[in-house]
Length: 130
Ligand SMILES: [Zn+2]
Image (tube, rainbow, N blue to C red; front, side, top):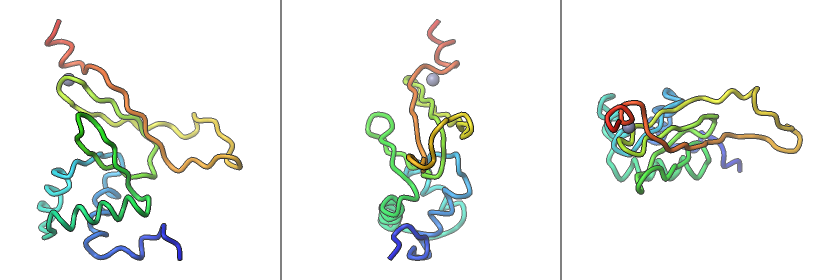
């Protein structure tokens, strides 16, 4: 049995996966996922959302980033990206990385996704403090 398939997802789990799929560069907190579901008028309980996220993590479709001060964020795995997080206002930015720029040997190492988080001070906060 191939555990990495989407076929085994329930309808509700698929709806949640689609949220990620439609916003491939976005990172979502639980709250943001809940809001998206409400916007689409889909009725999914928080409990089901948690279970769906767990499932999607298990089949390696999304992963959980323990982002800042214990806040959990979720992100599509098939992405090469770089996060920039402001330490003051917690504003987060996602910058895609160019695959061609990363040199790697496909035979020895198959990149399935990656994430880098950079912490710093954003332009707004820098202006305020100076
Ligand atoms: Zn800031």
